Length: 292
Image: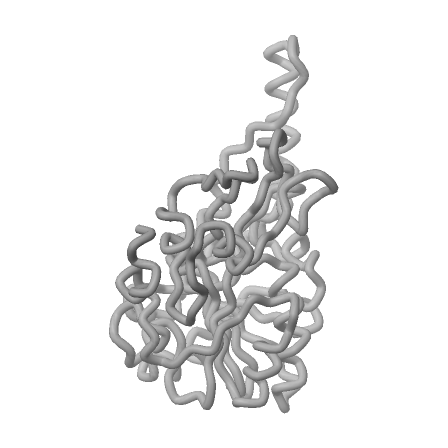
């Protein structure tokens, strides 16, 4: 994966963002044959644990992924194309405590986990006719160069030991950030889209199909600390498009009907069929509005 300053390659996107604000067609290009919404999973912590052990599928006895459907079964909400997490949990900024003692954290906005993106890209590889690299768009608001690290130090550690731990962690983190990416995020050039701007990266589908790729991508993934994920992905032939709007807790995928049907059928992904006009704002979930 490497930074690319060729922002002109994304010039086709803006004119096709024709949907009203908050709709599918406002965050991914219109004009595709079919669209799917991949729901970002909430994190579920079993009774008595109460400690997040980090990203991934969850450690034995630790936090794990739940589907929205599983959460909705506990709260009486209905899963439908416009469902909102607030319609299931009552709010988006709280931890939902179920009667069983499980705690559910809200899905991460703008962040489809690497393991799930790997599954999606494995499906997408068969839906493009070009071997050219994929283009990734990374939101310019990510600050990969300014992260504050608080490394673990044992109780009773001296000031010098704590400082040494911070320096060591800082050096390791700096090595996880590509200077070209940090400079581009800070000063461009940017792909300018309505209300958002992005820097562009080149990658291959094979790279993204390996869920460990962020650790080598130079975008600030460090040890067990997750960094940003791409908001935009498309192949050279524009056969499909993936959009993870920074404020949405779901990722939109568009392409041919056959490709989207494969996405909908993939058991690891919780995906719903949507249209460019589908309203993904809180007002759109009229079925579960009584849960807000």
